[in-house]
Image (cartoon, rainbow, N blue to C red; front, side, top):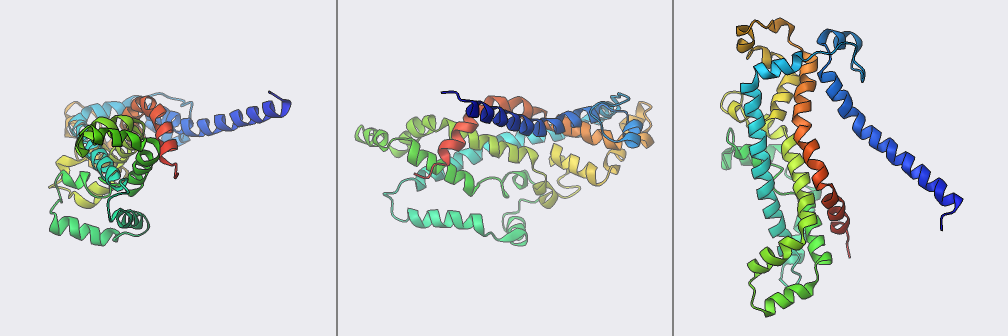
Length: 300
């Protein structure tokens, strides 16, 4: 029954959700408008949703530097696709294993998994192990393995989803019919776990796409420059705009004045290009994201 109090509560809830949505959307709009603002106008007046002078100079510089930025874009795609695929596979296999309560030692494995969420070896110890024992420095493994390949929180989400959302009778029936554990995992667990797989896939993909710390720690200036991703390039530009100026020989060849490089708006332009694939893909994963988080967070 719709009472006056219910209607008031519904209106307040809608206004609150609308306010939160605006807080999430407005930064993206400001990012895009800033990227098409004239550099001099932006320096003098600051960022604005309604720029006084429009300019595509930042995107022209990106076009001139497309050899470097395009290669970084391609590396970002490769790292994100490979890293997300391998991470989801490892996470799902791990979660399915520890969801088997009839196997001895699983309580200890669960405890050790949660322990890693509270304590870790720190940056120095992990850096020493990755560089001196695994020799991943200046290789593509430096962008795939450290900190991103396996996440304990994702494992717990998948484990809870498998334990409390997939009936155990299905596995028992498959076992009676002679199905192996691998066949049960591939034919029953994976298809029925699609919402949580899409959820952790989206979160892991975002982590790989936005990561720049692995490049900062494990890629050197010369040996690993060919592996730079778009986020690493953006971070380099934020630290030192000279990165583009030193690679502006092509711009000079076509007559562009590199002394007037749009340092402010070009950051916004590269960031806008960087988030474009995420904005396109996110609506397709949203319905799985809500269902996966809801069911994966159920404790019992």
